[in-house]
Length: 342
Image 1 (cartoon, one colour):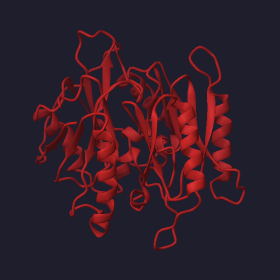
Image 2: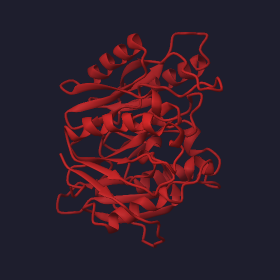
Image 3: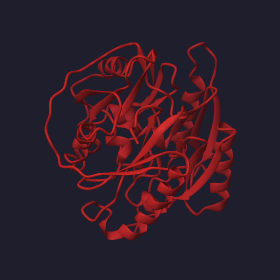
Image 4: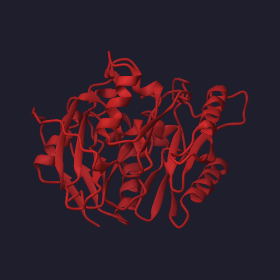
């Protein structure tokens, strides 16, 4: 498989906003043209543990390259969370139309961390001819790829904890944000999840740590039966809300519960946001984070396999990634078939 390196500098630019209901946001399990990784380097927060995290990135890169092209973005960047600074891609209903590459503002999860270099990546990649499609400027609106899930049929899942968090899109109300999401993502509806947030999560509750949309109206979600766990009450409330959701044609979703990893602590004794929900779907496989808890890792991979029959289910040790409060899906951004020119 092809491995492509792009070196760039930040730049400013202007584009026009486009909205067209002939487009849709595809589901992650649809055919892909490749996956983006933004590579760790010594000028990021990975510096104290660079060798360790590079081993994880190399493992991810190997599994991706076995199945599809890999786009590797090289320095300079503030950080490496491609899920949140990468393009969100709309695909046309009519094959004669080009894909649309939506460039939203990434502001370090509500101005918690510097993000100006990350926020310049998409435009520079586009100018380098890396993508097939039309560039669409939505830089007046903060939206991270990890904060949304699409079923490919017009339903977008997100969380109130993240999208209504401070320093995202104030003073917009929830209703105004919902209208923008429906408009920008060409969605029929938005389903908001009001509960659940992992300790140590800098994102204010990205949905890709909590609930994932899978084929055949299936939702994978995290939960625990341990009443002493600090997440127990919130995750039970989230589970109850998921039971209330219905598909566009009025049917309940098929729900599969993933086990919550046992607490993993950093050197200061703070819990890290380990979650098996942060998996990546690629062509023919699902790459799943594991945390050296064999009983729970094996159970999680078996349940993920139920949601994605016929695909290889591949575990990758992601203990290094959660030390910076993310995991496998957070590091990656997939692009639909016909988008990456690799």
